[in-house]
Image (cartoon, rainbow over the protein chains, first blue to last red):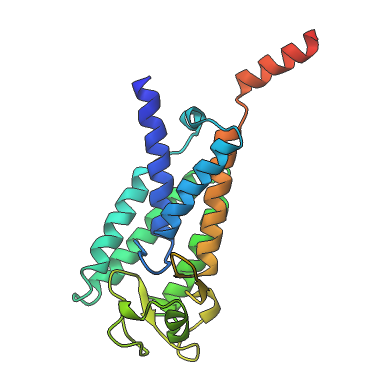
Amino acid sequence: MKKTLVHIVYVVLSAAALVVAAGAPIPWSL
Amino acid sequence: MILALAVVLAIVIALLRGGSLYKLAQVPFKHGWLAFVAVGLQVAAVYAQQVEGLAAGMFVLSYILLIGLIVLNRRVAGVLVIGLGLGLNALVTAMNGGYMPVTPEAIEQAGLGHLVSEVEAGTRILGSKDMVLSRADSSLWFLGDAFVLKGPWPTVFSIGDVLLAVGIVIFFQRAMLSVSSSEATRQDASRISE
């Protein structure tokens, strides 16, 4: 159960980090 | 920040459509740590721009890591669209000396003039990857931050950013609404027995 939750959080944060790093809108590009 | 909001919106839409967060546990997303390293490099690059060449090098390295991450996860739904958005942003950034071009008009229209001391060509925008450049002075200006979104959160964004938002919506819709093979087998069995 704990492993599942960790993987869910990992997927959400990885995907968010990917689009934030790949994007460049203003304000708050990063 | 608008792309982080796109992530939240994508998850909310999937939940409203009957999706489940637990299905994200089945997404085979590999080496996601590369994205965290890329973000770290870009944050460092934005705040280390006094050192000529270092910031550009860190940006290049971050894009290489992101491309690697896209390739490793190319079979995951939405990732190739995200890769296309990344490619367009990286292309226009590379064509303009390592900075995303934004026109003075776009900055003014969005009411974001306060982010720059002077809305003049060549001015860097603090805390961002952007540089103010007129259309005439920038290469591929239409791929830069040339589009304005007004409203409660005014923003300036690029075509690449739109593709990133579309890609992340596809990613979460497919991941959270997908039917796993075991569920599909169960559903098929129940259909046959009916």
